[in-house]
Length: 168
Image (cartoon, rainbow, N blue to C red):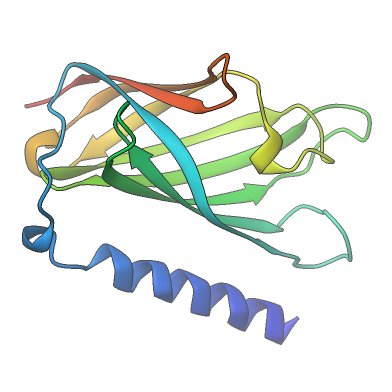
């Protein structure tokens, strides 16, 4: 248990270091408030098994996702921590998801409790549409609210459509 907890802390600390990177070193400009879409490409995915062996409440999934424009150029990145919650044995898996989507001109915070189709679905194979609330932002996205809807395109890529309201 200690080793698993230490691994979780180490992975989260690594995410924190990446989040603190120098945004001015990026050569891309970011999107602005309103409606825009990006392609989500999973870069890394880690499962951390806490408690009972196998999937169980408290287990964590850590994701780093490249956010690409429709030409395939990276314009941002997101870091997500998904925590498995108690769920019915024969029903969908309930999860808590906390994400930070970072662009050169600011960041967005997305947080929700939702469900995945079932406990045996690898996050890389999800095809259902998911809408999550934006709960805040920084930079050009200061005080952002709105939604991010993730859907699968006909070619299999995952697209995130942001509908944002920013400002006070």
